[in-house]
Length: 289
Image (tube, rainbow, N blue to C red; front, top):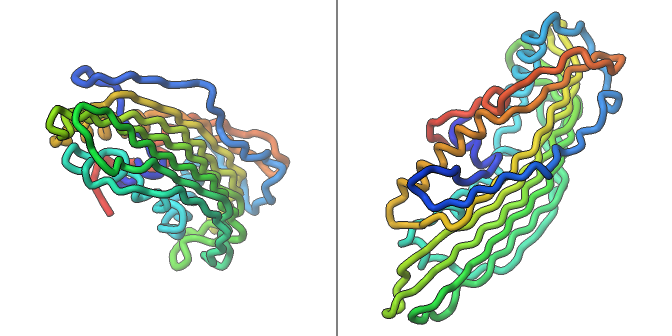
């Protein structure tokens, strides 16, 4: 993937010396409940002989699944980053927004099986003031919530090449995003100062049975939380600070740890493998579509 993995995890801003940031990281957020190995169907084939082989089987199957799903899940929150890092000149272009909400209940045929996405979403923001007065302070608040579960049944990927992986299981993605933009005007009514406060809580997980045409199979469960907030980040007409924070955030995400549990058909834990999110999601510093 490209730098768009930021959108899958939707973070913002790490502490660095040149910015007046208040960093807050909590330990209270838990990983989503992915169920137990006994809830996953049986696989065919033999258990990988080592942790390295098991992790590679999982990653190869997951990457094939991600490629097949493409825009089904990964791009749902694509536009969100544009609401997170406005420049000072863009502030006046903000438009009033009403609260919106909806549900997901979609079935996608993929690889001879189905991916069923269910869940709900909501977003809201306060109105941009209709009249800007001198020497005033205004706040614009925005929230976004997502709760999605994708159930994967009998999917075989990739469809037209080998090795092929039969996948059954589920993905979970839960997002709670809060943004506050504070604007201060000078005596002429022009915006003299703008700051951003941002908080995010993300819970993600995968539980899947994988069987490959090369004769290997296993049950896999991995889940993790990510929680972060910053306050009073200056918004300027130059976006270098925002870009630097995005880079530093991506570095933090790359190094965040998660534990991949591997089970056999008797639901016995065979391996417990420490991974970074960089390994799980192939994060890149490159820009891309």
